[in-house]
Length: 299
Image: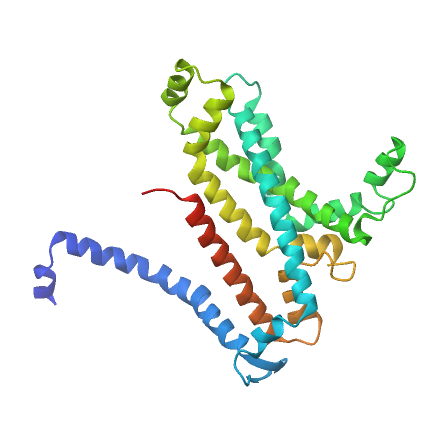
C-alpha cells in the first residue's frame, strides 16, 4: 500500500481524492434518479391493477394503448396548447421587462425587480387557490367586470373549456414571467457595453441596436429559458389540479395530471401510468434536442 501511494504523482493523488469526494453524491444520484427511472421503465412494460402486475404480452401493450386512449390524447393536446401559447408570450414579456429594468437611470430598480420576481417565490398551491377564488363565479374578476360593464352576467371561468384554459395560461404567465426575467436581466448585465456604444456610433437606432447587437448576445440565455419553460410546461401538474381539477370533462387536464389520476385516484394502474411518464420524458428530450439544434449556432 505504501509503495502504491509513493508511486502516485501529486496530480493523481488529487484526482483520486476528488473521485472519493464525488462518490457519495454519484451514489445518491444513481439511487434517487437513475434506479427509479429504470424501475419505472420496467413498470411501463407490465399490466395489472395495484400490486398484481405481470409483464404484458406483447411488452409494448401500454405504449400501444396510449394511441387509442382518447383521454390521454386530449390531455396531450391540452398540454401543447399551454406550451404553444404560454411559453412564447412569457419569454417575450420577460425579455421586455428585463430590458426596462436594466435601464441604469431607472429609479427604485431593486423594488421593481423584487415585485416582479416575487410571484415565482409563492407556493404553487397557494397561488392556484388564490386564482381559483378570484375566477370563481362570485369572485373578484366577475365583480370587477360587472362593475365596469364589460360583462352583463357572471362568467363561469372554470366551468368552460376555453376560459378554464385561459385561466391556467394566465396563472402560468403571472407566476413564471418574473422568474425568466431574472435570467434575461443577468444576461443583459453581462453584455459588453462597448459593442452597444460602437453600434450607436455607427448610426444604429435603438431597434437596430437591440435586434442586431443585444439579441445575438442573448441567444444562449433565450435558448436556456426556452428549454426550461418547455420542460416545465410538458410536466405541468399543479395548475391543472388546483385550478380546474382537469375539468370540464378533461378539457383542461394535463398529461401529468392524468398520470396522477391513473396512479392514485382511480383503480391504480401503475404500468400504464409509467408508460405515460416515459412518453412525457421522450417529449421533453425530443423538444430539448430540437431547440438545441435550432437555437445553438455555435461552431
